[in-house]
Image 1 (spheres, rainbow, N blue to C red):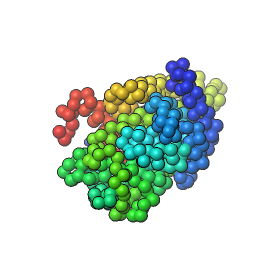
Image 2: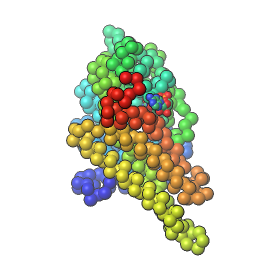
Image 3: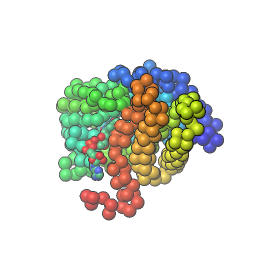
Image 4: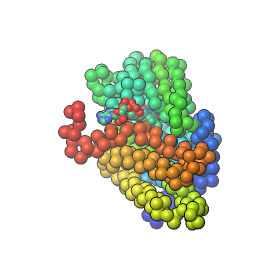
Length: 387
Ligand SMILES: Cc1cc2nc3c(=O)[nH]c(=O)nc-3n(C[C@H](O)[C@H](O)[C@H](O)COP(=O)(O)OP(=O)(O)OC[C@H]3O[C@@H](n4cnc5c(N)ncnc54)[C@H](O)[C@@H]3O)c2cc1C
């Protein structure tokens, strides 16, 4: 985002996040990404001390009551230094926003300050083995009892599966036939008896640790319910427009750092007696990448302004969610090629960013699902196959 368009406070927060990303994250990203270690809790706590984890929540719960726009600035800056750690700048605002709107006072006081300091990592549990796109027909069961609910079933493909402390999850409280109208949202402690977890062997985002979480007669109290019973899908899922914009900014950060590194390389590398940047076959693709990234960035920050102003932004969020991961993956791949044979080694971080960013072409909904949303927003239910 061009600093000329920011307020003094926004500029200050962005400069702080940029400095942290460049000084504390950039150098170690490749090594951390290649390892099988979970996200570095020490670095997460440092992010918490700087107020970068949940700026959106009010001061009384550990934040600064910042706008979604500010969340976006931080998310893009952190992704520039470390794509994997920037997941927290996407999931924390999403989860804390839902808790702020639908959680009890007790839940807010218990959970939000710990999310702000980085003491607590919160996962999102929506996808099940039977499929993620058709999430409204999920089957994991939450059975009501006198004291609360009993959970049985599996959530899969969950980011932070093996390291999360709790999960904002969606479970069936109504009949199977009620589809999305029989789903409730809960905040569940993942250290309860009956919870077990496994981790996937992913091609990217290894420190984030995607995997499955199994619930075997897990007892949770009534107070774990967010909002009203059976309204989890229809009311709470609305918040997901935010994560779609933040995902776009994560991808932009990773693409921009790859483009900047490549501009540097092509000025230093010589062929046929001149720096290769003199060849338009080299400079023009980079100029096109800059143009695309600026266009997506402009839409992303405009969409966050719409959100902050209380305006509808579902269509814009879906546009960003398919375009940014797709174009960023393509841009990073082209940067890899412009670095020649060095680009193909794991010595450079570019290949790692390409694999990391590609995952978000799928996570939080695929391009097909986003295009379905854009079509529905434009012309209504007539565009839906099953209506
Ligand atoms: C990196 C990553 C992180 C993730 N993190 C989380 C997380 O934290 N929590 C969570 O709950 N889930 C998470 N997911 C899961 C993700 O949200 C799902 O994978 C996604 O929604 C797609 O579901 P699926 O994989 O079951 O594919 P399916 O739903 O089986 O779809 C398979 C293919 O068919 C296409 N398709 C399906 N229906 C249609 C249709 N109507 N029209 C056109 N095409 C269609 C899809 O686009 C896709 O290409 C993550 C996934 C990844 C890769």
